Image (tube, rainbow, N blue to C red):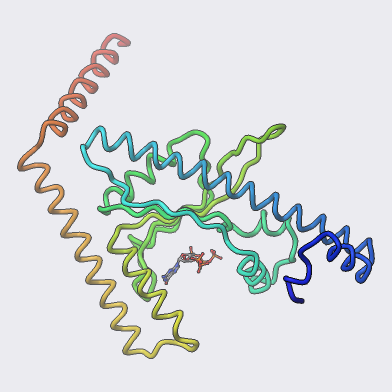
Length: 256
Ligand code: 0O2
């Protein structure tokens, strides 16, 4: 069906006559419900993106550097949703989308250092309106092709005019090195219709090893620099930690 033929109300009226008013009403109703559901997922992405932005601000005050390099969000497109439902043998329904697919809303957080990935994930999961549904740690346990990332499936509330809805989203946290590897690997795989030959697959896996080594070295260097030449904000942070723990010790003693 040529999309351009159905742009005006007259066109829609012609289509309505052609398919019958009931089927047309039903199709329009479903389209509206789908659009509404996608809006809810967009709201969930905004909520989570804001949470990470807030954490980034807070950590930048504490450590004098921003742990997050970039945040991107994406809503799965209708064709990919349909393909995934068919692939998993699930019904093509809105209920099934909400119940069975966890990655309609996707948030990718790219950090400079591995430690930041875990620090941000922990800080997010501690928040009392975030529920962890599933965690896949492909950093501790990379995929056979070398893919590394920390994946979290979470549920977050969105507040609408008359209701609160819990929406699921997939968060991918990774370092710049992991992200570069994943983007390039995706492009290499995307260009090939069939399986990559074994030698190429091994080379790609070797590149993943290189990027993992780079991450480990960079993380080590960060910690070296922080311990050898603590700057004012680092000293301040250490001092605040010291005061905080001495305060909590005093409080504990008072309770006893
Ligand atoms: P897109 O367009 O990025 O969303 P599931 O969703 O649980 O049914 P799966 O594969 O078990 O399916 O989920 P998993 O392992 O958590 O991976 C989901 C997403 O991680 C993928 O989404 C990719 O974004 C990314 N990913 C996983 N493995 C690889 C990999 O080997 N290479 C690259 N470049 N990315 C990977 P989609 O749906 O494939 O695509």
